[in-house]
Length: 221
Length: 221
DNA sequence: CGGGATCCCCCGAGATACTG
DNA sequence: CAGTATCTCGGGGGATCCCG
Image (cartoon, rainbow over all chains, first blue to last red; front, side, top):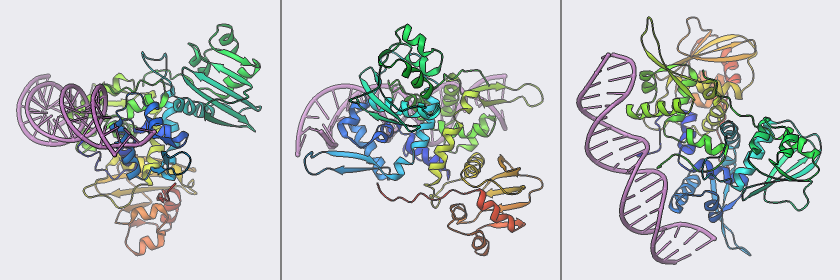
């Protein structure tokens, strides 16, 4: 990997030179949620050496995908934000996320869910499911991560963090993934304690209809 | 890179563990065109160590994305082919290709165009442009690479290699990329010798309308 | 000749410590 | 908070060799 280049005049090769670098795809995922500070990124990427995060951010800046902004005023902090060009990668990241979501079975030993990954998962799952039939605010808590989704006027918006007045509050348990895959009906999920729920139980059916990511069945060829 | 894992329960992280490995994205690109032999892949990936190609193919097989098939009969050869799961990555690869195509300016020193990259570029460019308004067969020659596209019934099919009876035969020159970006009109491209053409010149307008990939203008933020 | 395996060298990545 | 510095280790580049 003397240089990261492939010496091919090819769009995919150009993209590979960016997203093929270790950690870069996850850094982009986190920045897609919104501008982030260095320490925010480091916290959302457990295991990344700080020196490598520095290197990657400089590369993204050099490639025109992100900008470093030193904020003046009340909070004197440094934030990294995506450029238009960086944001243009979102459809590709979503397509990769959707494919990868099909690979998810039981979590591996020691795996965590971060806030950015939860927001991304909800956004992608909403794109794959049916449009919402009614308005609602739903918060989702998985592990330490919290996000909320706004179902409004047939569109879905996923955002990080909590919401002050959700119509439904979901907390995960083992098998939450089965709910999104449709393997587990909302009624059974409730009965078996797969999800802890606060709010209108009928909303859980709507949630399951809007957010869906089936398992990939690995039939060969 | 002790292990390629990210220890995150996240679809994008799963995808990154596959496409984040060096050369894997380009190997997948080549296999998307169709089953390929080891030597075909090596020829289409200039610079890849054969040992690494072996490793990557084994990983793709272990991950269920590709299968190794020892052909019996007339041609006793080994071919690698994508599984259903591997083929399911095509939308993601196309989205990445489309983004990366916007990055392409003048070729860098020593860059080549391979057959698989040309077929991919044409397929992706067709998806971004207008549907064809009439039937035709067009062959495109860029460097050593040759591909042809079938415009039939409003759909476009890109395939590797030549075609015995094309309605139009295009050979590249510097600035061919400008034609796809719309920077250069077909008429001017012809007049300035950007493309060498055999066949009906009117077809060049249709070609330019169907296959289009604009440059990314790098306006910040 | 196709389809790899083996070897050495070096750089990128992980880990930890430290600083403006 | 936002990085830099240093060390170590393993993966990738490159060449060569092997086997049916």
